[in-house]
Length: 553
Length: 62
Image 1 (spheres, rainbow over the protein chains, first blue to last red):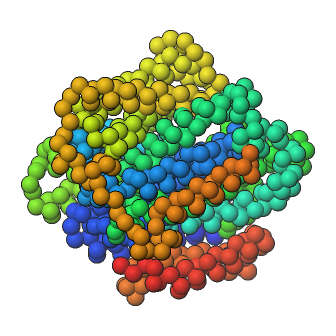
Image 2: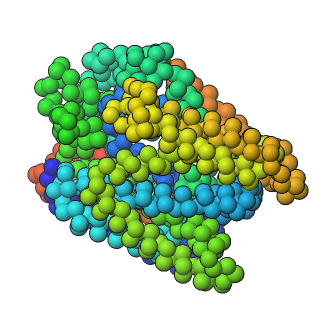
Image 3: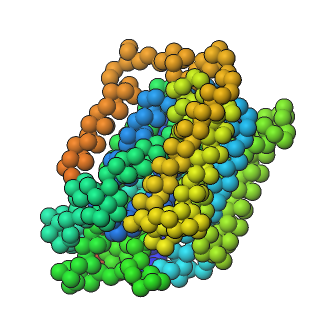
């Protein structure tokens, strides 16, 4: 793949714009709240698009296209079983607690609802995860540019990290969020022509259905048994593991995305943020799953005349992660090639900036201000927040080089993240809806859930991974293993939290007002039109999602 | 002008207008850019960019 002047020009214009946004936003930054939380002053359409953009990083764009090529249309379950229902739940039921509690972060909410040690555990694990995620994103970007454009690895790292550092240092969260919205449009509009031309070249969806095995073009029909579908899981594992534990765990408790909704101007807008975000999210499979299925169809012998190929991985099989870059290289001419490459770069930078801004909020408020230096001036925390931004980027660069030296560290870190994230939703669910839940219960549940996740992974084997204690049980796919690990950790956390809570003293009810469902006055929007209320909008989204599942059944 | 630059819709719209001009003008002067796909995409970006820059001001008032 070779770039020409027009392609480079587009990449340069993009870099100038993201840096320009940083310089423009800089003038608005007067306090630590402006820098770290945007001062709760961002319009609804921006918070909504930023909400899904924070998730539209490299793993989402490249990973979902790869999954589309590997597992077929079943990959839409990440959206139509996972994301949409969780986002509606977050908007209707959980945002009133996050926003109403005035907490500046998810760990701070845990402190208000439970105690200091639960906050500390969550803050430290989240800060570590975000900075490592940012580093892995940076490594993946540099590696991709090295493979497809033969750019120097070190130059790519310095360029991407330097640009993200400048605009997040200047404008903090607002700058990151504004750029995320720009990146959202660039990714969606930059990849849309690819879907259209590739789909046309493959003969349309009807032709793809005749070329591929039916398991790759039906979302539910072959999910009765794990042996009959490419993902190797049955519908029960999917619905509980992905649809409930993993998706709700991510969309409802991960501060990286929840932070975007917490920036809204008022409670109504905060509640509608994930729900409005769910509308484009619902149709995102057209951009990130369909290209993978098209790539798989183009590899079939009947379409060999199209000349589309994909590189092999180290084991000699198809390297599915190269599905999107291969499609871009095959179909995009000079000019549009620059747009496609810029869209890929944008997705990596979006993921990195999202992680860095979440990291600096949690590190400044939940670790530094809570445990090390209390009661200092606001200016002190503003300067420290900026220093943490730089430190976060430098740690990301270090992680990127560690990942380069030890390739397996990516898998290892992703695994550790799943151990921490898997059980977290049980803690929130019990904390928000059962007033008897105690701080000791939450803390013990989180620890037990994380240990259970590690043990389950150590006792199961899938695609050569896991089984490091003893390969007691074999699972068909790595995806299926992830769902089972998450499910076990969630159940262990849920049960442990209940048992320990019943054995320990709960907080007085007056301290739980605004934090627990049964003790909180619900916001009423009866005077507002139905389309401005979270619940009716959420209901419509759920109905449309069910219809989409039926269409691709 | 500074007030306009604070309007995210205007910034995004301007970005897509510039990208569309690169695709469209580049196509006129470079043989390697004469692909129909560039023109279609360029026109689409141009329309989107103008709409975003000039019809989105009300929603983005800070």
